[in-house]
Length: 302
Image 1: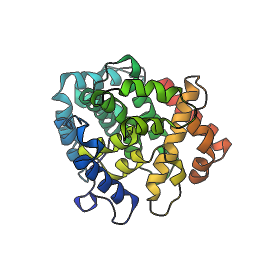
Image 2: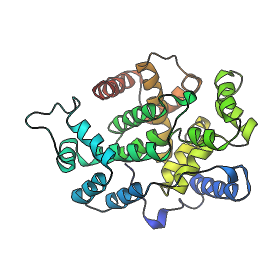
Image 3: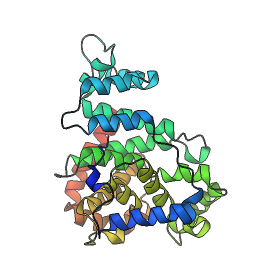
Image 4: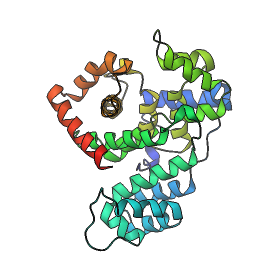
């Protein structure tokens, strides 16, 4: 779940990388390669949910009414509340309100957000098998890691994990030849994935993911972090807000822990930049192992 920022901060802090990224995206949207990218509209229920959660004291009944307005979303909450993750005792939940009380407000909103985003940007292609499943898994990892990092919002971390690669299905649906680019980019070892995207299409999934976040009026920090999530050389630059660095560094950790949980080898980003990410987060190998325990426990429970 991601709360909308206050209006005064909607465009980022002047003079920072966030402001420059916003301006670059808007210019490219008007006259550059982003002109022809089709961004699905933000789901109305997601906009309502974000507005409800932006209150100082969110109204549980209002959130429950939003959840109940979509039968499938309500059923998802009930299934989770009555499932093994919460090891329910006594009578099963039969209403959305009961389910949310058992799951917790923030966790319920995270489930609702994932449901709405997945339905707004459907993925029906073999190239992206398990895309939303892995996005949800990454979001769980990010929210778990955020609990170890004082000052990092678990809501923002969850949103970063969920939206991190959202530019990929949007590009696949909008750009001719992008499916072939995915194959080529995944196979090449002489340059990064996004370099192949830019060579073939003059944009990449990090830029398009940031565009989705901008169009959907999600927090500027989320837009900037997604735009920079492969730019690890920028870690520590003074013109980037510390929260952005923390999201990007934690995202690299989350991706690595996901891959280990799935029995996959290290990727190039981890091999080349894990030292900088761990230095920024002030963690060592022992702490990373503890994080992995906590994340794996959440993966296994889910």
